[in-house]
Image 1 (tube, one colour):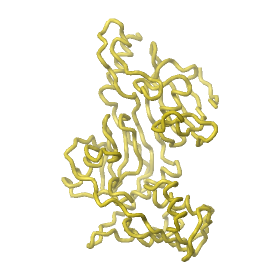
Image 2 (spheres, rainbow, N blue to C red; image 1 turned 90 degrees about the vertical axis):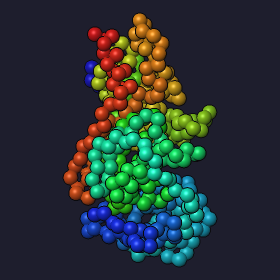
Image 3 (cartoon, one colour; image 1 turned 180 degrees about the vertical axis):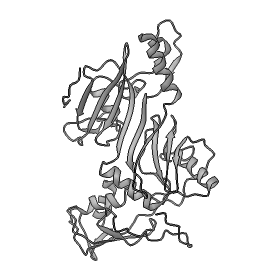
Image 4 (cartoon, rainbow, N blue to C red; image 1 turned 45 degrees about the vertical axis):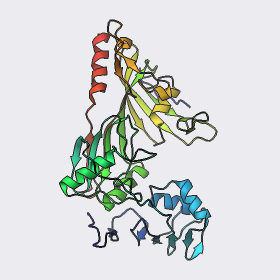
Length: 359
């Protein structure tokens, strides 16, 4: 049964260690020229076209590693000027404006290379595509300053005499987007600053097509469905998210059932938006949480859960969510690319077992 319904060019570093200004190609999809590229110094942007956009939203686009809230605090503190005057967050930028941002002090430490194995799907002079393994944080944060994908990438860059894009945070070079610690699959990492802003722009404009697969509890009633439910912070646990119709931000996910088993289903998930924990929250919301996702209604999967004749040994101890595929435009060569990440072993073994008892 098929039915739709609603559920509610590379740039070398300057010899003094600072980044040199990026050339702006004639076809660049930007309305401004960035005059300063040193993230540790004040930033200056010259607007070449009228923008129908607030100052805080504009800065969020240009400084993607800073949250909108932190940028608003910077503006409120008088650290942002437009044409030499202290500006407000709702200032609308126009052609000829110059925006100066007094950046906060950045950390004096930065991530260090570590010999951590990486599964590289694709690599060229502009970016790397990694099939991230389970249990691997993307970048250092909150006391986890080592053992992350960034540490592994820095080691790989040393071995291959390559670089990662500068970014605005010394702990996150090259990072364009993220996956949860226990979510496996494909993730793109920029090697050059130009590749970074081109790829980040595609994510921002939602022109990159992302496809995930998940094993969920139960059997959804529909073969394909649109989940349209706003997501915001969970009131009981600030580390989690929830469907919040009061203050939630719009969030949409399309799911398609790929295969049905006795008590589980394999689904393909296509997020139209990119909210934190979106896929996990949405599947729990419709009553089919992702298997192994104990934070959002799932449970640890044991062999005996699938086949009563087997032992209760753990089969899956993390959410059964895998970033399978990305479709995007190459940031330098401009051709369409489709990259896929093979299933991890635990995910593949789970499906194999489910198939064996569903015959």
